Image (cartoon, rainbow over all chains, first blue to last red; front, side):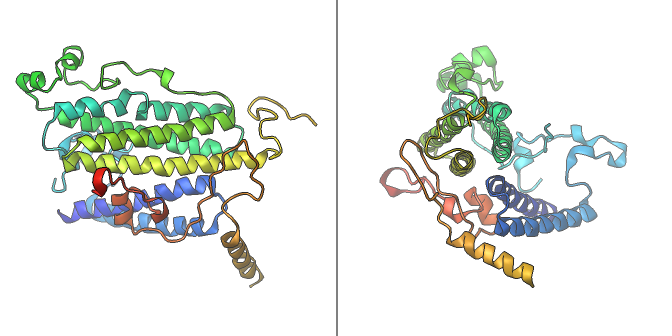
Length: 88
Length: 201
Length: 67
């Protein structure tokens, strides 16, 4: 797997941790352990995304007009095999 | 409001087509205990919930289930996309193919179209949350039954992920029910419906 | 310092509190409130489908084989 894909994967994993913590926080909104963990995880997430964007451009594909092209339309879309390959 | 993130929550990369497997997995797209029903149920129940934490968990789990709906659609698509007419016939997929070709249509494995009849929005917080807990268990059992028939690890991995998420959701809905209980009098939880009644003094 | 002591006391109280309510009359169902102990590293969390080891319950299927 190339380095860009590895970083994407790392960001995705950390994002998943944030999401599972989010559900816990919905039913435990004042739990300090959870809040501390969430904050730490979000810091990690933000740092990884910044690193990605420095090297490879936008991580979130929603608003990418780099090179004067609306990249949003581009293949592959998430349900296609090639979107889920480790080496793209 | 919803934004769409252009990636699956868990990757789906299936190399080998399998129409029989597609036919049973599609029940989690449009069947009675599938992801479409789950997301619609939770997102609809939010409107009559009186408590903030419960609105939050219904919103977040309902949203996650839409992502799961997408994953199931991707699995069915990838299990069928390269089938020849001969493979379709031999795989028992002809009836579905005649109506939908290789489109992904919300239905059960036996072709019954999606129905909101499989879900409840009762407008009572206790009833709705117990319904949600049952829904998560039904989804878990369905995924386990799918795992019994799937040998392909490309299919098993995302299905295992989806199954585990249902166990987490079950716990969260149980906790949401505790939150509702905390607002009520334990001597009689059923004295009134907090979504509709004002409690008598 | 007083605030830190207060937060520590709150944590201790939270850890000692029962996951169940004090009063659990019949005619209702009660889920224990989860308490966070440890969490998985991100890659493990993703592969297992949850960040919480307490909720990680794989399906073993027939004959105890992992499914």
